[in-house]
Length: 344
Image (cartoon, rainbow, N blue to C red; front, side, top):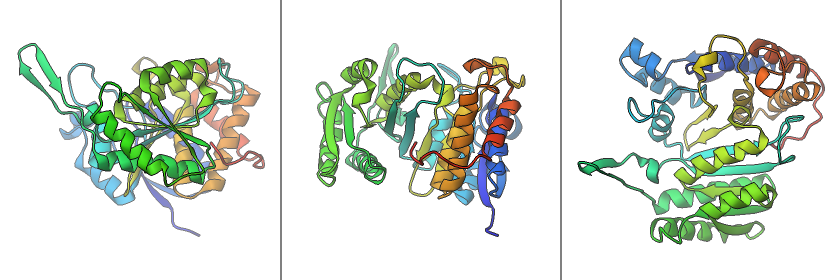
């Protein structure tokens, strides 16, 4: 019997512990073995350890190289910095990967959407380089480097090639930010030359938002710098039902963190009504990262059958089931022989 996978688990706060526990149950029902190293982060960790990201958590991720993370509340306009951003920076998780794909029987304006957002994760305006020049004047520095831009473009094209995607669009604002976004475009163009079978395009970010709303089917893989990716990935989540239904992966050379990107919803915490779909789809991505495609396919089939039958959906998607009942339904449906393809 193969050894168990050691995974760092960050339950998060609010509904985080409930939805991550549902994901753990589904993962263990695949028949794979896991050893979970569970740690708190954020305000709860500070109360217990005096640190927002305990050193034990850092050491665990260094050890396991894979983490599954629930939502963590981030104060707005003050308080501690985003735990998500801090972890990405600490482990050089340079690629944020978000597949956008519809689930069965979730009514949306756009059926059969199949997009991938690839977001550079370490620099741009999210470098956190801010200071007050004089009272009432604050400066934020936007950092774009050839190294990071080339690396994320290569990631996008490699993904497209391996997964038989047809097009990659680089998203930019180089008409205004000619040096910074201009550098990002030059790097993307250079990488595109190595992938002649993939159609390469460039769209200005504001036009991209309009084009997406008008016709998302014209896009396939979109690659962009940090801030643009944060905005556009949330916009695209609306095509398939919202942030509660889409997964996210933060990938680097040495480790990966798979996280739900929706909020922690403290108003419904502890009520067993939260929808665990986003973190379940993160778990699916995690399995693919580990090379466990068959187990990932089981989860996908179970999740999609639960949405097709609609008997055990949570309230946010038109059902009456609780978090645990939803997970039970996915586990039961996973026993059905696999029929779906492996593409997200």
